[in-house]
Image (cartoon, rainbow, N blue to C red; front, side):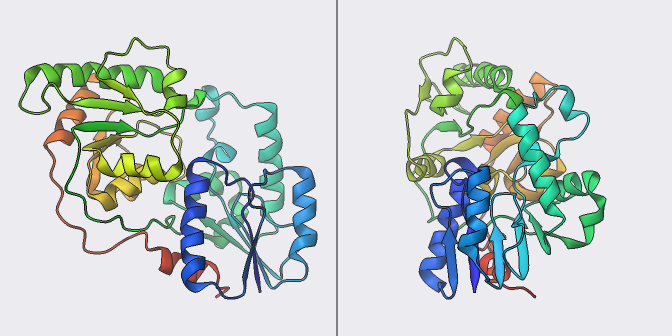
Length: 319
């Protein structure tokens, strides 16, 4: 007697989450109905889903927008940090008219939620800072991530699996990574002349950088192909700061790969001992992080802190 709205899961972390949900449903599907696949969030869809959910017992919105009426118990997953920007972040993030409209709808319907799920403590703090009245209904549950198979065939590659957006300010950061790796390649023992940096296509196209020949563009990849590229890399660079979770941080932790990311409580919460942090205001700090990442060797993981079965068993309950 559970209806789950999956609308909006067409790319990035939302699609990655949906893959984990489908894996779980294939193992334990019982009384759970999904709607909204391949649909985008829109006014007509929000009205339609109320009718399609009917008089069910539990509605779950995976896309930030709480059901207005359907469901005796309403759960919403808040996964977009752009809906809960701080005053400081608003000084350098361009808030479009569409984002302002989305944010107003998300905030307005949030009051109807019986349970509000966020993937990190930092996302919980964002929500409470703007809507303190919902603090008692918030639960922090890390997104589900399956354990990857053990890998021994790591390539001499650092991968940046980040799709570009203006607020991520990736251009200068990638230029600093290229400069640091260029020096390491010349020195020899740590990386060697075959050390490569690989970038995702959308991100690379918008940087307008002069990239050396050892920076490789991946081309258009499916989610499974991108996941394979992540798992085969020697290290990950994930230089963004405005995130609600960051699947590459979690996947690096489970894959026992160093992940180069801004030093923050958020990154440490998700990446754990795989984090190789740097100061985003200091290019020398980033260069040092690249070196440490290439030197770091991580031991085996005792348990999965992002266990999908535990996550979805809890999510579909109303306890």
